[in-house]
Image (cartoon, rainbow, N blue to C red):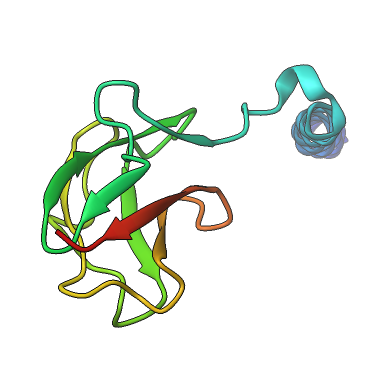
Length: 142
């Protein structure tokens, strides 16, 4: 009889232990869900801006080169930016590409003035490609 009471008591303790762990896990889940909706627990949004040390010029001659840097803030991966431009195949090139945040890439203007007379340079976050900044550069013949 005593053995059966001890067995029943052990069974009750095991049941309580497993439910306490389940309750603890449930409370952690609830806290995580609540924190997800609270702005004070959200990571700041990634922001891309041209660096003040190497901003894109407003105008550049054909084949000329210049340094352009973009700064990415709040990037948890610190992955930097990829540069691109338009109109495609008529806008110039970047080297190196991609680059770290606030590190200049060398932009080489196209060899001829594009039909629109300008190119658009875009710096896009590697971590979040929906975040970018752009600038228009007028391309002049020498």
